[in-house]
Image (cartoon, rainbow, N blue to C red; front, top):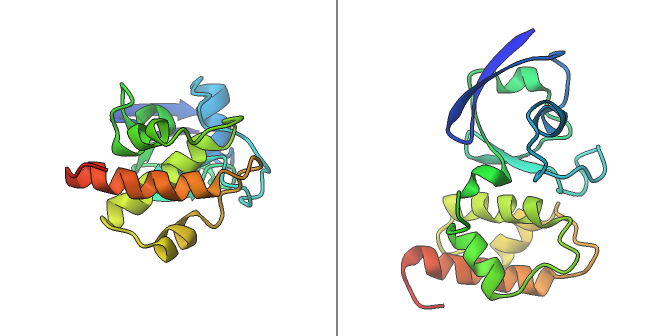
Length: 156
């Protein structure tokens, strides 16, 4: 079944089983491997992408549910790592192993798109489902505050 949607700003049509998870369409069909497989049950957040601007878990999102919608993967966040979240992640030196980071970045970007100056409680709530086995939660929170300041044009 052919399914058409917008991916990272461009129109995309795939001919796959409509129940195929978006994660596998991104990785296996389209070759975009920045979105990671973690648990396959929407528990870890490694596969987080944006669907019409909201963070969703690609591992449990059937491709049929994205027909006619807009998907942004980590590859579409910015072409040159100039998104405020990417800048802040680098400035705060967040990643250790890095495996969860694409999902962390996408969840943080979704939060900042909705809340320009998040509190620690806002950050904790938005990031709750994203697991970092390296335990970089303090750096992640600092990076989100820094990204908010960058986005607002302030010096972090």
